[in-house]
Image (cartoon, rainbow, N blue to C red; front, side, top):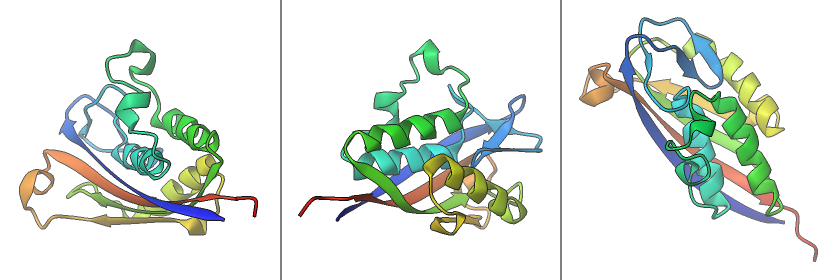
Length: 162
């Protein structure tokens, strides 16, 4: 068995007039994330971590924001395609550990739903999807509620013949 670790990061600006999608679920909030897709920072960070672990570049390489094909796309589709991409190299997802940085909305009550959606998409157990939410104590762009950031670390596994 071969294992690899990957790390991902994403950030998007909070703006009026957009829906807020995080971890594959829609949250009721007065602001949403600005981006070419639905701007789900958590899924984007996970995709980058998975692609990095498999040495397959990054989300922008595979799903460029210059392509109309990906305009307003549901990021769950991008995650599904990313899991398929790493599978072409024989990898599957082992686990995910992620952190969302946001002052508002408070995310704790939404984490189990996010875990369920993400686990289903990646073909793993919900216990293998750790999501934490934190603030930056009103410091920086997340503290000023100008944007939301997410970090993700993943483990991918390849079954190798001996």
